[in-house]
Image 1 (cartoon, rainbow over the protein chains, first blue to last red):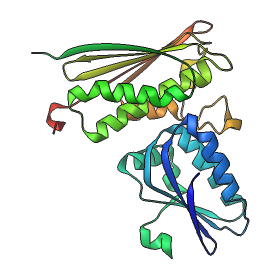
Image 2 (cartoon, chains in turn purple, red):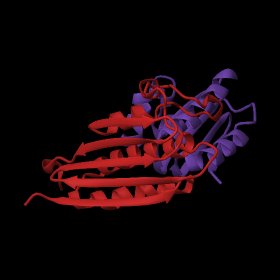
Image 3 (cartoon, rainbow over the protein chains, first blue to last red):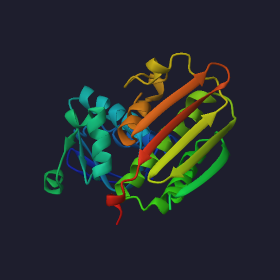
Length: 107
Length: 145
């Protein structure tokens, strides 16, 4: 189960453990359940306790990004490690997904 | 003296073994005193190669995956081998965003990640008999803690 909290139209989800191919399907299912509420306009992924991510994570995050974009919403990330930031950069995700600092995420 | 060491681990192509392979390569590489960032690079590249073997090599079937690593001085070489279906067009498979499984939200970035995080990546594959991914990374002595 992913920890999450709602603040108006924002949903902050804390990803935990390791986001690889093995875990991707359950994370995808859980995120889809959490964002099924159409009033959510911002999905904010908190990476502070995520221990590992590979390209399977790119697929999961881009898939959720497309869903949010299609409803006029946005996706942001907070607490990204330098390693995950490199994966974001090389895949081009940093061009469509907003890197927020903690204050922006709380606004 | 030039440091030399070798290891080989063989495991079934089930997704649970993706994290197992990452732990094994990290534990083996630690004797080179890599930085935290170098360890993350190596684990990520191995995770991609092992995932490819499981998802593509043995698609719909099961077989064994071999993870082999050699330390030669400051260079770590890693091989991930499967005896699966093989890749008919390796150059195409290595293109960023190329995926045979868009419906599963595979990003097609596996080889690009390996190339970003390792110094060299070579793929040899024979359709019908399997694929070997060879990667190496220099662990700079000056990077040691």
